[in-house]
View 1 (cartoon, rainbow, N blue to C red):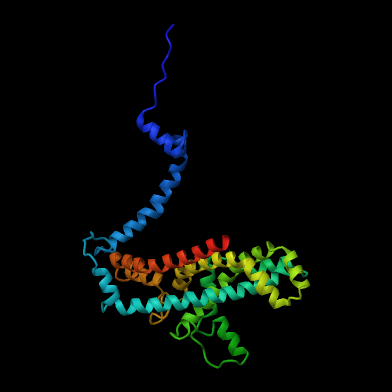
View 2 (view 1 turned 120 degrees about the vertical axis):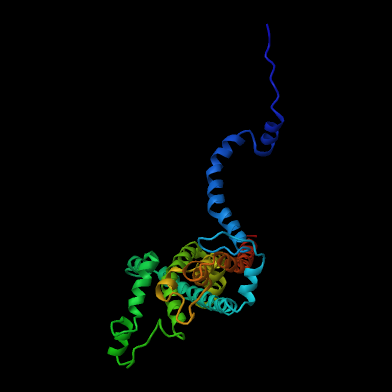
Amino acid sequence: MSTKTLMPPAPAQHFWRRAFGRDWQLGWVLVLPVVAVLVGLIAYPFFLSIYLSFTDKMVGQPANFIGLQNYKDILFGAEFGTLFWKSVVTTLIYTGTAVCTKVVIGMGMALFLHEEFKGRNLMRALCFLPWAIPSLIVGLSWQWIYNGTPAGMLNQILIDLGLSDTLIQWLGDPHLALWSVIFVTVWAGCPFYGMMLLAGLQSIPRELYEAASIDGANVFQRYRHVTLPGLATIIAITVLLSTIWTANGFNLIYILTGGGPANATMTFPMLTYQVGIAGAQRLGTASAITILFLPFFLVLIILLTRHMLREEI
């Protein structure tokens, strides 16, 4: 009787089995769609943007390698240099003011909605409503409210109440446009903070507040030593996400002002759009603008990630 001898696995298969386990083939089949999405939607556009930033690529024309010329034109050139640094300052003011205001208002909203009172569920639904409205509807609605003609809702209210005798150009005045846009951004973004912080408040055990009250802690001391430590990780995550979303915000600014008047609301996403698509159609220069802002987000993500890991430890 002949016996079958078991053939040892091929060296390549033996390596993959040791590295990824016996079912490495099935694993790759299951992971492959995710890898394809990450490569196609994230990795490829990212590296393509880096490549284009070193070229003179324009819409409808081939790209020619020009090295660091785009970066020199943006940082020190007469055509884009002044506008770029102005957009940096505008982006910092817009993002910092909006995020800080949303944190304060969102915390107050969460503390209020955490209390027990009649009609709390209805009040929660009303407070969270702005977050559910599409940004296009928000922008068009506030464009009508801010309208600088007598048809504008805000101007009409101020004139009827006798608080103003002139038509205020909320979106047409360079000194008011940025703050008007920030107000809309805060109005639309506060519910996100409220929802996140309210969920965090509900996860804090009431026994901690009862123990603090027994020890003689007042309302402010309980908030400082119980509420804030319990919400530290959630606040960090919320601030991280909101900072990235706000700094990259495009829809509201595009609908309300388009970056004007006199570039008063020209944040870096609007500048990238104007340089790359709407105006000069210089895709290479626009790509360089986005790459220059990349370190800001990397530093922010690293700092907040280290903070969250330290809190977990």
